[in-house]
Amino acid sequence: MSAKLGYTGRRVLLKGEDFSRLEVLADGRPLNLRLDIWAHSPDGFEAGYLGSGPAQLALAILADHLDGDDGKAFRLHQFFLERVIRHLPQFEDWSLPRKAVAEIIEEILREPRGEWTSPRASRPCLACGRLMNPEPFQDYDARGGLCYPCHEANKDAR
Image (tube, rainbow, N blue to C red; front, side, top):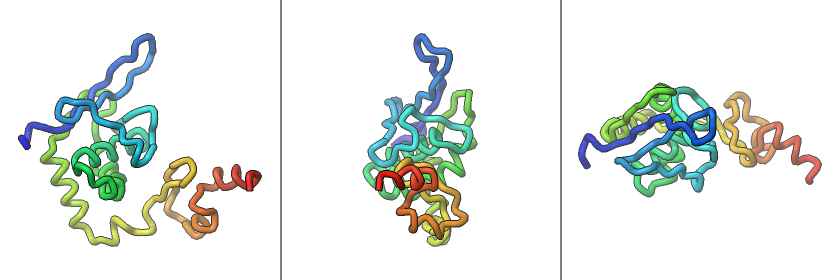
């Protein structure tokens, strides 16, 4: 693949609305949200900060780039979010060459294995998908993988 190919993002104004959304292309075609892997942000992509929209973008770029290795994309996307997506301009056009994505993936994978598979990494709530603070996790398993608000809301349903 040519080094010129890659990912581009630009803001587009929605018809009849006062706000814009981030449109992302992969090699000139719309990038799939990949909500089938994890639904951080069903409303779409964002960039330039840490949040659900940027996490969805990180996951979608990695899933596209890794071409079918969705498990690897999921395992690495929070690290890609931290290193790349949070630093992209939020309100300006940006581009990310495939070569740069490949290099960042290799950097992440070169880290000691325990660093990117650590149980201290943020964990998603199994009900709402919200990433939970890694400190402390002792209650995570006792709550069945749910964040505190979801656990409390489900008490009545049990």
